[in-house]
Image 1: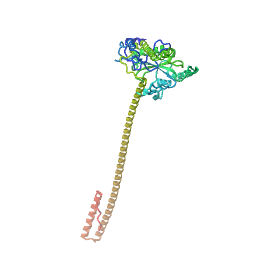
Image 2: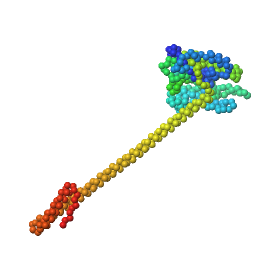
Image 3: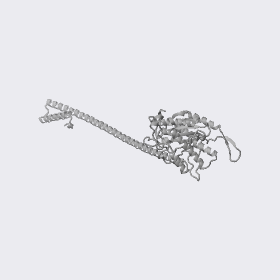
Image 4: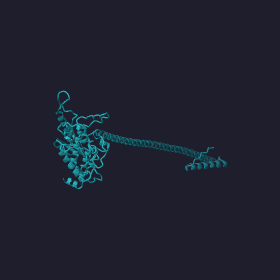
Length: 443
């Protein structure tokens, strides 16, 4: 109660979410919110203007609440019932689309528990770019127990017999149809993310759980919260009727059943339904919302639309999100392709560069080997020249020495031999110094 007390001291206003549902107080069965999606003061019925003005004048909390984050927010309570099998919506009178199939218990539990595949159970989470997170347990059965619970609930439902009264013929008994709504849900939403440091939020959560337990009593199955994977923190409450139809537990549907039993027809049935829903919203405001800074009804509520229009808008949002995802995926694919082409081009250029460098290195090696071979040939030729000149020099010296001994050389011949010896010596000196000189012919 400390959270409640602190919330009363710092009450803040909120805006009532579109799709609000109201439920009656004091119904014979535990009263909850209406079977149909939502009912608001401004669109509840097409009754008299006096009745609307009266209900609007009696609406509590529309001007006394304070601001929450600078915005006036309203309470949100919504209830719906689900069957074992999906039912097809009936076409409107005068033709028109039948709309999508109603969800079944399995799909609702899958959405609550965030089961995989996410595309089937949590498409709205994935479309918003969020990661599905398991629910937070607040009361009743734990989330991991719901699968076994649903199996037992189906078994209970299969054992229930219903008496059928045809327009003609005898009354007979048959097993309850799988199209009977055996599980009900009540969703209560907080405007925005849950803040554990916000006393108003803590009080709202505590009072909401207490209110749900009070409304459903022994029919309550469990209370769970989705805290992280959606923009608004909201609470899911599950309730059943021991395998029987849960509509008698719901204020709007219960009011319709009572009106039909009393012989009421036409618009009066709708008025009874809307009055019961409106009374429930007043009860929730008195027990919970006004203690947490929430308005009974927003001063500027959003535009009300039919369920088919709401589903169509949601489908368009999903389609737009999917289109955006496809465009982002296409852009990423193009970036990957461009990067792949750049990598391939760079690899090709690197390969060509390596090949060019290898070729240049091979050519340089060949040139070096050729120069080495040329140098070796030159050295061989030089050695041959040197050996030849030495032989010539040696032969000339022997001739000179022999001629002088015998006195057979004239002065002119001696001078010529001396000149040749000098020339041979010069050539040997030139070869030793690295100069290339042709060997003179011997005479």
